[in-house]
Length: 177
Ligand SMILES: Cc1cc2nc3c(=O)[nH]c(=O)nc-3n(C[C@H](O)[C@H](O)[C@H](O)COP(=O)(O)O)c2cc1C
Image (cartoon, rainbow, N blue to C red; front, side):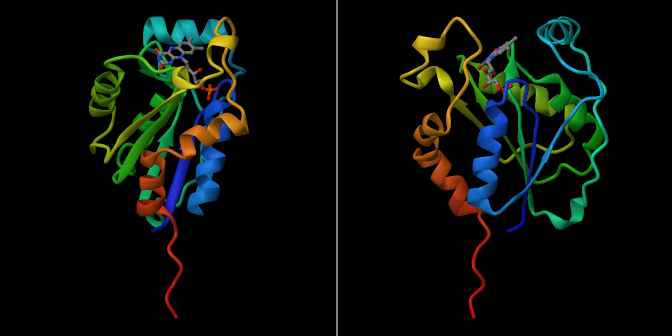
């Protein structure tokens, strides 16, 4: 099973987690970047006008991969807009895929993510998985600013059954000799 992880991050959380997952799976990892530096103001405009911002081109040999993980934050119930641009741009190649987000966590959010993917992508995701930082014991302390996960904080997620299931399903298996 050869897996590709494509991620977008604004404040670093999804990047930290994507790198962990890539290491555990033996997956290739690529980052969605933008030609323009992003600040909170652009996030707000993207959210308000549901924009598809310009992203830098990525050269991906799609045929190499059996499964793709798309990883991005959620902004006001919406998949972060640069990831939306990526999905729309590459929809014919994004066939066997799952969507993972390291987000705050909000009720009914999963259905909203599913709806957005249905609208933008051609194929349905195998899974949509939310890892919710709201549930971390240290969340309350940092509540007023943008919450930054730490490598230690991530351990709570990597110990969860849902994470272990990902590893069992998508990790590179050792060839039998
Ligand atoms: C403007 C803004 C809106 C957000 N809205 C949501 C939301 O609707 N649901 C949610 O679960 N998290 C929400 N979050 C939290 C982010 O998804 C979370 O902090 C995420 O881990 C950030 O990922 P990053 O560090 O990779 O950019 C929001 C964050 C920002 C900055």
